[in-house]
Length: 493
Ligand code: CS2
Image 1 (cartoon, rainbow, N blue to C red):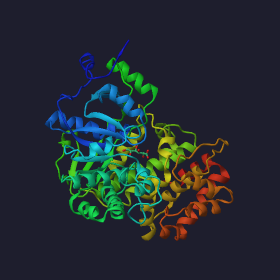
Image 2 (cartoon, rainbow, N blue to C red):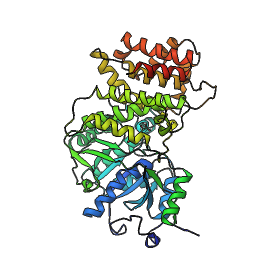
Image 3 (spheres, rainbow, N blue to C red):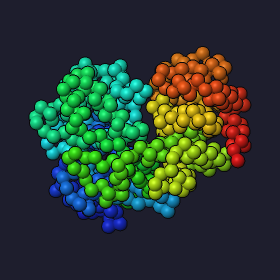
Image 4 (cartoon, helix red, strand yellow):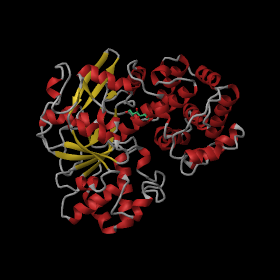
């Protein structure tokens, strides 16, 4: 019988497996992290593990799971330890990460998350809760008052459940107790994520406690960050490989690719771990790096997820093995590159080539369905913002129109073979209602273009944009996705 991974079983783990380079029991907590999913455990927690090994400090992380109890139930019996499998073309490497401490399942332990966030030892609150969980008004700034993560918390700001409500209430308590604020570190794939979250927090606080809003405005830092590591959802094979390599059962094992990147604005009012030891790069302004990553990696990901899923490809690596789609991937990368200014120290051509290799990694099973989720949250920063810029300067809209038409085709919820699937989008009901009547490609495109606040009005007013989207969608619906993809690829050099 294999024993469960825990501090007590660390000694029995083979020497080939890297273990925490510090004593997890000896380091205190300094960070509270909201959203302890696979991405956090493959990225920021690993960098923090490196920082603790290199420079020490009381910077271990207390995790908060806002909704699920599974992650707490997997990690707490393991003293927060978990196996990270790093899967590259040459094989799989296992590492035990020790930077996580207790995980709070907020649904089961009301009050514990706020207590941790308002503890004097907490100096950073970081977040990976996914784009949709904030309830931000992306078009207008501030929060969406009717959003399920916002509306109940505006009603009962002292018992918040959403991310922004929790941040505001924890900051209120700190101010009331005469404590310094923590730094808020957003690690979700949102454009200028710190600035956006700051606007949401200030708006929320302004509606419940204007004096607190002024204090937050003056005292709280919200550095923006660019985060990158392709991390598929764990599968039974992840857990089986972790057990085989470590000799321990691990209910919280995850897998990821070798590449990892974290670019952070260095504005921490209460200190930070030595994350540079884990490869993090500190810069004054992260916006250009974020734009590069959101448009090149994520924008291309979204395009290939919709087109690839509809073409019958389960994994991103299968998409890259399909010459028609691989060509469209390269076109999308080139088109996204064309919307970016030069970036010091980065060759965008090399970056694009590296992305193709990462997408093709044969050891990573990243499902197109996973990337296809939450399209209405992802399209604006990934595809619509660059498309709008091109529309303004009369550039070639075709690749972006193709990607958006693929999303629209996907939004119909049925493959060419007639198989139905769930969209898994927070606006799924609205999308379904918009396309319920079916109709012509033009009426479908018009209905989806009309979803409130999603498309920039200026883009939809550009006939070059709408006619390209409509004609590509017409091809997908009339001649089938496979033919439409082949025709589209044939247009590219
Ligand atoms: C993906 C991202 O699921 C998605 O939408 O595009 O999760 C992507 O894998 C990460 O941003 C990579 O850093």
